[in-house]
Image (cartoon, rainbow, N blue to C red; front, side, top):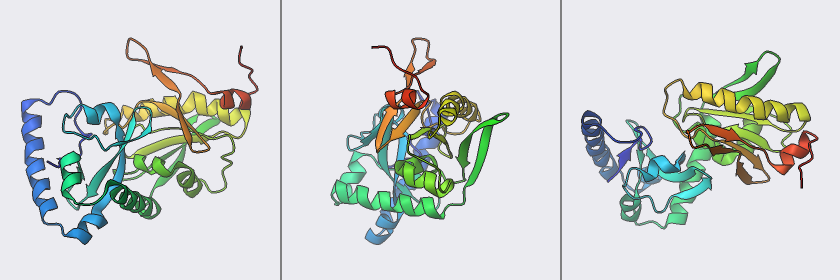
Length: 249
């Protein structure tokens, strides 16, 4: 079974929602069956999704690759009428090895990142701001798969030496701030979570409520969930050092 926009519906599906999803699924199955090998490869695109959300579908995504804590990378087909997420059975039916599928999907995603018109804006509080990137593409948040290249594309010349604090509030947006100075680092920790939370309230399909620090290809989740469901923000030794803070031993 193929699933249209598997991250669109959260939690338990109500009857009318489930019926709608089943109709979409039937249409998606038909679209996929019509694809020849070259069309399948051309449509194959990787995507970042919430790990808990995709696991809750019960459809089987054992191949999904962890990108960061709470985030998985899955295979999709970018079709004219829908974005279709591929569970285990569809991946197996392709007859292609998973590494080859992932390589093709990532290359297609990278090509899409360089071709999609995106709005790059500074958002924040008065004189303090961070960068938000939005576009009509449902793969916008997934461009974080190539975060260093994406940041260079959207903010050429930005100093990434101290890493990047970022969040993926919904699939059409990325919020981030490079951390090269103490002020940039404080702004990143103060404003990226606030702006991401505000953008999640827009009602678009969420990806993850968490905030991350990218540094030298390592991604650290900066947020942990409290018992009441709220998030608590932490830092890393590298971020503390950038702000001139010394951790207690």
